[in-house]
Amino acid sequence: MSRALIIGITGQDGLYLAELLLSKGYEVFGLVRGQNNPKRALVEETVPDVKVLTGDLTDQSSLLRALEAAQPDEVYNLGAISYVAYSWENAKVTSDVTGMGVLNILEAIRLYCNGGGASGVRFYQASSSEMFGKVQEVPQRESTLLWPRSPYGVSKVYGHYMTINYRESYGMHASSGILFNHESPRRGPEFVTRKISRAVARIKLGLQDQIALGNLDAKRDWGYAGDYVDAMWRMLQQPAGDDYVIATGETHSIREYLDLAFAHVGISDWDRYVYQDPQFFRPAEVDLLIGDASKANDVLGWKPQVSFPQLVSMMVESDLAEQSRLAGR
Ligand code: NDP
Ligand code: GDR
Image (tube, rainbow, N blue to C red; front, side, top):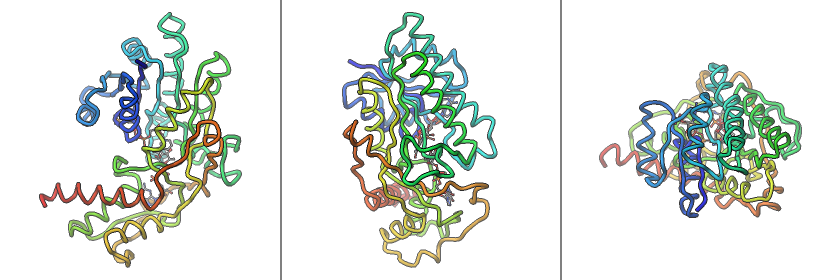
């Protein structure tokens, strides 16, 4: 039975990845931070077969202890401060967790393996399309020059190159997945897709009147998180570590997302409900993000399965059910 350690188990991707690995017969360990993390219960309910360990990406000895307890064949680092807007106001802690945290786990794996703990632990790093920022070519591929536009993006670039460096310096089986935006009903409510799907459900149910947003012309290459964790797993099944862009190859604006989300509940004139609030605009925006996943397609046999309209419908449906339940209907 293969063993996997997921750092970031309480997040959107962590839960989907845990479900995928459990379905493949893995023994799965998940790292949860903090002494009383409210999301621990979510993990215990959603994926009860996961063995929860405590630790933090900023505390290398806790990572070493987790490796010793889990004795993993595969380590997935999904842990990060992942909200781009927050990273301008909290650049230091973002750098410590999202950037330096990658060095901490890579070095912990190296020490663990050298100490006789194991050889050949395979490592996945959750890199991001935010690294392309001020894009230098369209679509973006593995070789595209990185030009991050936020402290989050800069931190991800550090983690990306550190992963490559450990692969090249120590022969580690280390892969970096450059994932474009991926969403789901488990997406955090601070991100724009879930913010909209939840608000649309509440407006439909008469629980909310308006929604405040930032730049409606921003565009993203949005896929479904369930598809994207499958790509992570496929990377670690290859004979050697490498870097892969994971994307749908389509880009859509926030306006298009609004069109589909409101249409799903039978509302066509969404302008009545949406207003723009300066607090949701960013100091710098990324340009036209659109990914070329042909390498992942060729090497990993990976293709996205869920279309953009299906994704939007899935999210609004799920929020309708949740909001109805919360409202006692
Ligand atoms: P989430 O924000 O949902 O999850 C982030 C996870 O990181 C949470 O489990 C969080 O724990 C954990 N974490 C935060 N700080 C620490 C820390 N100090 N030590 C250990 N763990 C910590 O992100 P997603 O699931 O959406 O994304 C997973 C990864 O993929 C992230 O690294 C993200 O940056 C990256 N990514 C995501 C994309 C997307 O579109 N979703 C696209 C490209 C990359 P807690 O719950 O306790 O806060
Ligand atoms: P992003 O996701 O920054 O791409 O990072 P987010 O959903 O936060 O923003 C997407 C775009 O929507 C615009 N926008 C708003 N965003 C939010 N959050 N709230 C609003 O009210 C709003 N109005 C407009 C933003 O300006 C932006 O252009 C996500 C995260 O998961 C990262 O961790 C990951 O690396 C990248 O995707 C790829």
